[in-house]
Image 1 (cartoon, helix red, strand yellow):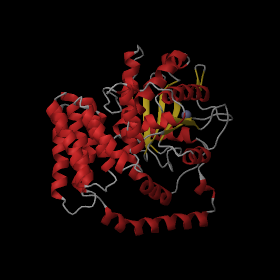
Image 2 (image 1 turned 90 degrees about the vertical axis):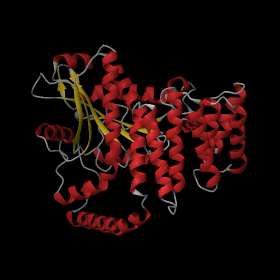
Image 3 (image 1 turned 180 degrees about the vertical axis):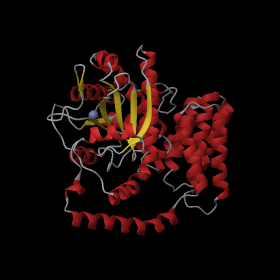
Image 4 (image 1 turned 90 degrees about the horizontal axis):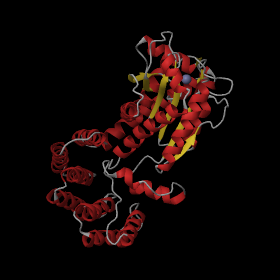
Length: 434
Ligand SMILES: [Zn+2]
């Protein structure tokens, strides 16, 4: 995948100086972040919650998760952000209530949210907690009166907070529907709710209502222009990448996301430009789309990659092909890049797992069962230097006759786009409450 970005264009001396400064900054920052860090038991509970939200767990798992947060809350009386543990205890209880449909469970969730708001009225989570309490009353307990009390409280006291606008809109929806509105949340219910036109402020509001923290998605159709990518069996990679990217954009826009493509025509863009583009457009998530090739024409399947320094030889080969003439990273650069990207690896891995799983299951359901090539790590330059969860998807092997024929059919490209969108949307929803 073409040239390296910014830092590699500098002279050797200057480059070393910049990297050296970065290393010093990192070392200086470490002790500070260690002091300000959240308790480890909280981080563990949070990771557990994220795992549960990405799956479809039963009530016992949600209860255990809620108990975990409750324990963190009780065990850390001097911790500044204690309210966060209590609030997430509420999130887990709300999830449980959505599974069990039990009024008692719903009341427990609402009461923990209310506690979060009343014990920590000036915390940044107070309005979130009141809003979730309102949602629980309205949707799970069918108590619109109580819901309105909380929404009005937000309007009065937290009118400047980020949930004030959402609360106002939610109340409006309730009024229109003679009581009921659904702003929530729950992964199991939500597809039916995404029905409003996907443009302008309405969309942003919708995304906010759904509690998404992924708003802007960058899609990167690999190659283009003077670099057509791999070509076999009548498949030209740059064209397939772009077509799937455009289909994916349409689907994601309908779901309420803001979407940017790094290229919209058959043009060549350097890797540096792709990376700068995603930063400039403030992407929350980055997905690069590619077609795979192998000397072994028997190999087929869909693979999702995250940034990692490859160990196996076939992965190194693929990274070499995708990076084209981008040159090689020196050892010093490698170490620094690893430090700089390490923090995002977990999120990228979660995103990759979700995309891989959901895309394959969608393909299978729609009569195009595809081999699971798995989630892998590789040193793709387009993923280096990206400051958001980033993945690279190889949608299929054009060196395989059957897969090449599929890639040439627009029906299959649509299926692939839908499968990728399902994974991205599921991941975005799992971030709720984070
Ligand atoms: Zn490629």
